[in-house]
Image (cartoon, rainbow, N blue to C red; front, side, top):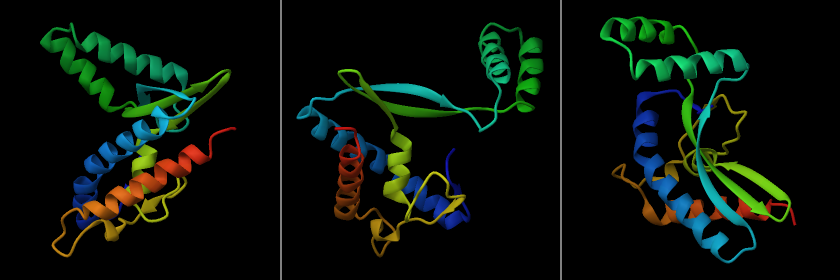
Length: 161
């Protein structure tokens, strides 16, 4: 699940950093895996809240599909039902394969590691890594590049031998 941001300033900073961090993470992944024996593919995924049953996931998926062809009256009812059900958020996974080994990496998790101080998936709330911002509040591109590269290299180093 995405980390919780506790104030509006941090929210604005995260909005400023996340897209450039994502681009740099993907670029660093590309550079590292071009020269490796791992095959990398990317996949859009839906991330559900912990504890969401398969039945609920199937129901939400079916309702979303029905929404596409529903009459205006049916669509209103479907939207009302959907507001009462868990909603997934989009994710983007890097799927790595080498011989019989397979590893899935959530690219947004890597971005969170870049943008937040000492981020781990178990963190409930996070703090922006303000070194990634200059005095005027804009992106400090050199530090962003360095941290994105380091995070991707650490992920690569943690892969099975």
